[in-house]
Image (cartoon, rainbow, N blue to C red; front, top):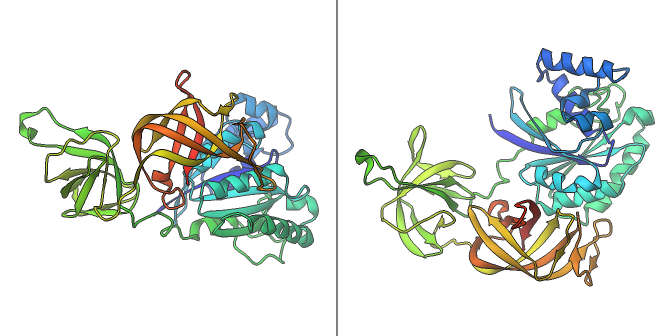
Length: 413
């Protein structure tokens, strides 16, 4: 079985946690003791029904306020596929948490309250999904029970969202009417919406094709660790461990090591289970080369005729996540694949309005949750691709040098 990572997003109280709880409950993916605990907590909170949102809202502050604050990860499987869910917050102040959860997702579910339609945070999250290049998007029009399962309401929201999504780079969009509270069209088909002939949410998640989403053309292997055993039995062993960030590599392939530019050939590809003939993204492997080359963490093994850009000048879209604004002249740590370096903010070129998608060219800084185009200069070269081509080698994070907090997420243009 393959693995699908998906994230939920949307505005506050649109029912993200309840939807995931219903998905886990109806697919029989929770244990009896978990359900007993949720039922007991629901009674203690005075709820008239079992609050399935408690399956993901585990923090005390979340349960007291009835909101999601941090990203909650849940794992489950059906006979068809395995899943990792990232339940992300809806509040604007926690947009940075949403970016974290969606950054590795294959699919995103943006929820909309059928009574409210599209709101600012719905558009913000849809734009972030587009910016993060999440390949597939599902718009779940939730709480259909509160609008009498009206087809007219659903069609109006779908039309509004489709018009907004047309301005974004969304390759695959699916719209599903659901009631997370009662389970309509989540796992089981709804009897209240005979006018909807599409898939249920779980059926869509099980059958969507993700095999072509990863970049299997550009061979990229960032070196994470150099393996040099001290045992006499392995005194000649030198392996380079890491995770494939793109493409495929096979034993015998000619490769080049960056940034040195030294050529070699793959001697073997190894895993914990032994040698394998080939490796592809996102496998974690150890690569051995025929030549002894000075290679360290942060270097990259790739193909001679297909290399990333080696540059110290970075032009990127940045989602800012700190209360302290991003300003020109600021110095930060930058982590890109396995490479850590320092970066200087040369210029904040413009800020994007997430509602209108218009640029504010006079923006001197990026404040919390702002998204804008920024030019950086790094102290050492980055081995990078365009984010649109490869999310692994095209993305980076910015870190405050004093607090060591992640303050920004960048996508190289």
